[in-house]
Amino acid sequence: MSTLKFTEDHEWISVDGDVATVGITNHAQEQLGDVVFVDLPDVGSSVQKGGDAAVVESVKAASDVYAPIDGEIVEVNGALVDDPSLVNSDAQGGGWFMKVKIADAGQLDGLMDEAAYQAHIAE
Amino acid sequence: MSDDATLKQTPLHSRHVALGAKMVPFAGYHMPVQYPAGIMAEHKHTRTAAGLFDVSHMGQCFLHGPDHATTAGALETLTPGDFLALEPGHQTYTQFTNDAGGILDDLMVTRPAGEGADGSLFLVVNAACKDADFARLEAGMPDDVSVEILNGKALLALQGPGAHDVMSRLGPEAAEMNFMQAMSCTVAGLACHVSRSGYTGEDGFEISVSNDDAGALMDALLEQPEVEPIGLGARDSLRLEAGLCLYGHDIDETTSPIEAGLIWSVGKRRRTEGGFPGADRVQREIAGQRTRARVGLQPEGRAPAREGTVIEKDGAEIGVITSGGFGPTVGGPVAMGYVAFEHRASGTQVDLIVRGKALPATITKMPFAPHRYRR
Image (tube, rainbow over all chains, first blue to last red; front, side, top):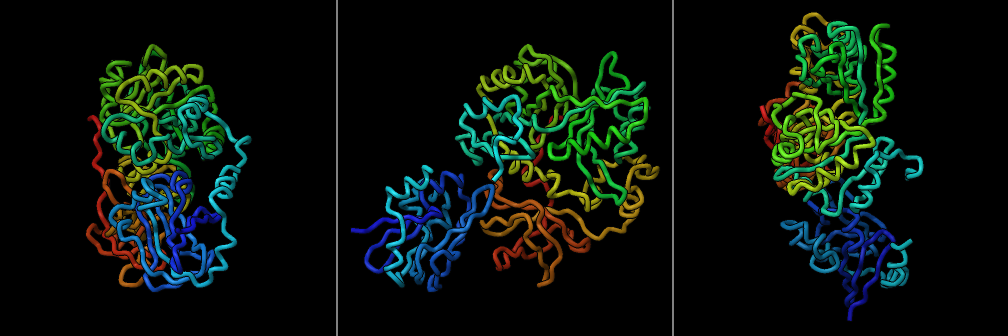
């Protein structure tokens, strides 16, 4: 059973063992509009909690995607290269960005659960 | 964050909100950036059917003088356009220039046709520049030419290959015009001033109408099967694919009309006669002393290169992107910018520095999507 958590910056993170899958929330994709390009990190590179991890580009603008936790990139979603619109059609499923090997599981405790995130975006 | 309460609204504001538009601050106005369909769908709809844009934030004014020669001559002291040669019922594109030959704003100038119109010119200027433009006109016109600011007028643009059929039903007289012609007539039974022009590269119309009638006109146009409302987001991607300049980005107080590739809008008589602010620079550049040129850029791959992106050639900086994004009709990234004059040729291979990486691109002719004006 995986655990789904959220950041204030509208990333989601789904934890399964010591690897976490990261993407942007459905709310985030609605705000961005049509996604036309995703710049994904290199497999093997390290990311830091709150640091730049990826860039998502809509017709209008480029937006940074931040790493929810520290870790090493072990896989990126190659399907986004050919079809960036997956981020719009399935943000919290097939539109995932990257898989991160978790460096410090304790960082997960500071993230929001679904109810807290829904309250955050309703503010 | 801008405080929405301080933003101005067009007469169509409540309709945008009712249509579910995402409203954003733009040039001091609360404007629709997109409707629920989204920028991509709105862009494609405009290229395949017809899009309706609220551009009422733009500035509209008349100049009134005793005769055409006086009014045209007065406006020619502020711009490099040739208005003496402008025929009644025709429109032309020009720029206000400064003493250094830079561009203060770009604008459309129409010579109205019809009885009583002699000596009048109708101007449409950019929203963000309109207060300065009106002040410049008030200060720059001679005593016998007055400036009438049209705060009571809205402006709608109907753009796309379906615009002609829509106008044939609602304003058949206007549908007979060709590109850059203009006339007063009724559209959907409402008194309007219509020009065959726009900012998308498509055939279409810009319709000036009283604030009181603007809502009824918008409703009548949206009732037509071809027409969907289009926001500022798609307006920007449409004009970028059409290779058209956005003031404050592709042209500004530092760029001359010649560098910007707008020499076609500088009247032939004006090139030799001068007599407008910055004429010496414009004439020098026409004679060949140019340092940079506006060009189109086709990035390889899918990554858009945005405004401010540095352009390099063989590792050396040669220019900068002034507008860049994704072209929905092209189906990939497109950009325009300025490069050093010697590198301007189409086919030149360059690098765009996007997030620290060199992205290969080719200097290319514009437009990216062919113009489809009715001539």
